[in-house]
Length: 538
Image (tube, rainbow, N blue to C red; front, side, top):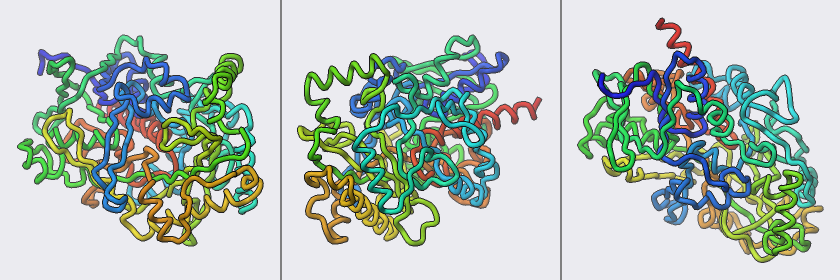
């Protein structure tokens, strides 16, 4: 491959982790770096305006718009799974929530045999990324590139939600990212001056003119190329033509929990019987590639209010939309600066749980589906999800064609614990709605109306449950004796050389909360691991 253009490092996927890696690895001008992304640049104004989440949720130009297979436990419904397809990846289209997960999540990773991933070891990388507008040492930083901003104005609906939760024993908190996650309050958001702060905005925009960094967009990687089990380059398709790039040091796969295992399988790393089925030469028989798929399943309870304090009302009138626009133009505040969800809550509903096992997202608007057209009445939404599901799914290619999406089998609600936690979560949400002062603002329950028994509530979950967009675990790291561990604890792909996976697919278990910031943390830590490896070889 000597005649093909060559880089020290090739990063596949410009999502939450890929943008971090491009920044950190190209900081040394001696390192040449290529970042390659299947989607376009992040030019769409709907990406940068927080409330544009409702548009990008359905926009095929920046969204892969995947669907799962019909799920038996979800009454055979296929579930829509949006994923980012542009610079910034899903950080360019997500709900903006700043959550790290619980200290215990990362200590659990360490206990599973992943040295270097305990809470004390990952906290410095969370802080390295963080530029918080309010919170500081010892748990936070105010100087990192990825901004975490507080919501400027209180909202009467969120205030009522907080007070009702207090009545049920959930304490108010001003920081969901401290050592005790339990609490209710306002989320901090990945925004700055009323605009989204994606991984591309934080990590790529400031350094895009570096001479040693090449960013290629609208380029679909079709396979990783190997020589004697060493990753030596990639093949990609752009504008209908095939191209190749060589790597002198490492290739880092950061295509996400769905497409990283897909690309490994297309490249000959995966379950041997699956690869043989499609005539793909086997580079390494790795049965765990695509297994261990986990996701947060959300249930959206919808209520009609008896007062016009819902964002539905503002969005439904010309004067309301003008007010929203002026609020953003003059003060960089209001609905345009926030997106969808303002209020959050973490608590325990299962007797065996030692830490919070459910999470709420409170939206001051309502619609039939996330990102859908708002209702014509003043409404709000309480979304609740189980934080640590036991159910596991898988990802498999269905063709050697890289443009054909993989088969996504979510396997939601396949364990009794997950079903029981889901019922308890919806019951707790209803308790909040039935507790003053929130109860005094509610005219009627829209969903799950008329569901009373546990069987009825479970049926509501099956008919209405949807992803909250946190797929993980499909190229999990783990100790060598763990059969399905695709990666070692430094994120290197077992069985081959020169290849790592750095994204949510590497997580052995799902963190207790939103996954964007944990993915950024993994990018920060992986950059250090890669550079340390290189220094050790010199």
